Image (cartoon, rainbow, N blue to C red):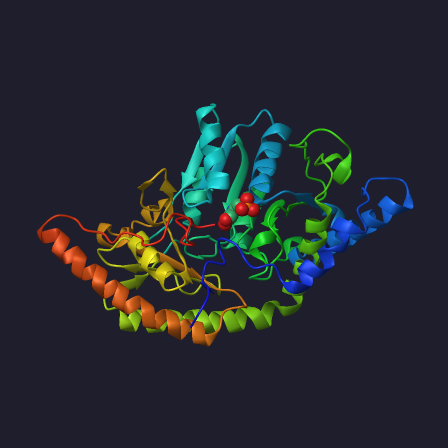
Length: 408
Ligand code: PLP
């Protein structure tokens, strides 16, 4: 099989052709500013409003006005957490989890250094949250709770309704990072105890550089970006119009095919999982299998390094990702797998395969043909390495060949 076999859809997805098509005229023909008074601009404003409605429908918001367009998921997470702190200055305590994406994790670490007390909730060996720990963490000083809907590395889904009920019973605002959940599972924020929700276009076949933040009506939201009056004074800066319109279209398509796509993708993921577990004896799945995104498989190969596997997979045209963060040349084990107390001999050997509607059964079989010999070869080297010096295969191609150390 020639060409790129893409199993890294939690990092980013291909823009749908229908999405690219609706975007193009907004570069060349309809280039007006959506905030302008004249008809040339205001017709663009109407299309932005339509996209807002499409995104509101995807997340099940009661009113499109609750949707603010942003530049990405990271911006949404930052804007939400900072707004909640600013709107309740007398309260400083933050509750979040040890397994958040760096967009929340890094910000909360930064705030902790600035003197905001942070409670970092742990997870069990399956990646599930301990709800009693959450109950015990909430205090009269808690300003906000920020917890992800679904984990980007393992796909584990948290019980957002139950978490939200606990948080709301204490009158505390609840922000959810829904970046990996949007377009993969049904999100009905209107019916859930969720106050703010972050999503990002490029995870569901819209372009990169556009996201949205849901802010429930009645929640005080001081803007993170200050300037003009765009987005009803909640996010200054001219909207990325073409991308916003693309995100609207992608949201409409994702919603209309949600059940069908997630069933199909789940079948392929389960097939891949079963094949790999059978053909690679020293392998295990990380994270609970039931409450999991339909597209995500995080699998560890014992005694190996995920990055070595990725390099060799890349040489076969297969794009996947490790579950580990890689900082400036030194690879560190994934903070998510560490929080799950994955034993040391399995910790480094994690590979994440994340699928989309574009993957096929043929690709699943191809991956299952290529992975076992790679794993066998590396396990042989690893056994040799234990006897003598450590050996790891070197990439034959240069840096940036399509393997991703992260995660997305
Ligand atoms: N939150 C989660 C759970 C993610 O997976 C990601 C991206 O991978 C982000 C936030 C950040 O989104 P963006 O890349 O749009 O900034």
